[in-house]
Length: 374
Ligand SMILES: C[S@@+](CC[C@H](N)C(=O)[O-])C[C@H]1O[C@@H](n2cnc3c(N)ncnc32)[C@H](O)[C@@H]1O
Ligand code: SF4
Image 1 (cartoon, helix red, strand yellow):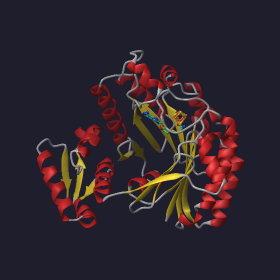
Image 2 (image 1 turned 90 degrees about the vertical axis):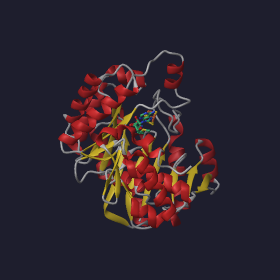
Image 3 (image 1 turned 180 degrees about the vertical axis):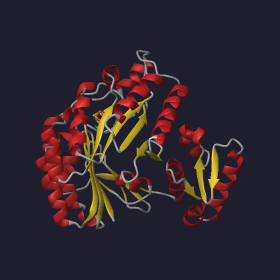
């Protein structure tokens, strides 16, 4: 089975915190789109039928016209076998949403939306330099709930000037729309972003780690009591609405990433990533060449990744899987590292599965690093 990911590298304006690959030179979007379609043709032998999920991410794929998405999905369905249950997600920016746009997306075959809401406060949205305001977020969500059953709301917590009360209001506002899925990410300060400079120049002050943890813990508590499953660290879904794309990614299944900067994984030891430059991407694809780098993952790399993704998932990580996949020395190393940490009660064994205790959840990434092989 395969999963297809399309990275659409354009945005109307640059959010101050974001270092994903995108350009605001929107006039060349059709050129890139055509090159992406050509890349899929060049790589068609990598697609292992049937397709389980198709994901349009970015950048802002809601800048693509529904006609173009319709035509690509028709091509895909003609050329490859696609599961009846295929999940086809599009990341949507609130300022791109109109009732007609959503209807046309649905007709084209999109069956899941991820709405980049981020916050319902204009102060936050301004500070983020988002292209939408809170009224637009609300209007977009009203339209989305009328058209789509399967959708997710993206939120960012740990914002400068936020506190537990403002964050709780944000969660409440999101929940009013009865979403079956929420993804919430802690604001991360990435290098080469405006936010990074603003913090360095003391124009903006971050809140403390303790306050960020408090916001995350509140989110987990609230979502759990409302019947959401925190199936991965940042992802909360009602049963039946966990994202297939995300789960396949965390479960180490293969995916083919199309478009500038998109990553691919063969499900075994090969990872590759396309060039993160729109002009050079078009140039190579138009001459029939793929421009990417690749790496062969070692057992140590794969073990470390399994530890990280395993601990972030609700199932935890399996000791017997580590033994079968990586060998006895890895399993013994894992057990010894966990033993050192068991007293702190951050980890616990649930049969064969190692999990993170509720109180330590926010620290998952750091705790996973304690189990890495270096
Ligand atoms: C890269 S965006 C693409 C989708 C769409 N353009 C949007 O902004 O919603 C996917 C998600 O990553 C989040 N994101 C990007 N950079 C982040 C950062 N530094 N900290 C927290 N979340 C971030 C975005 O806010 C968004 O919810
Ligand atoms: S967060 Fe989304 S809209 Fe903002 S710059 Fe990044 S990809 Fe573009």
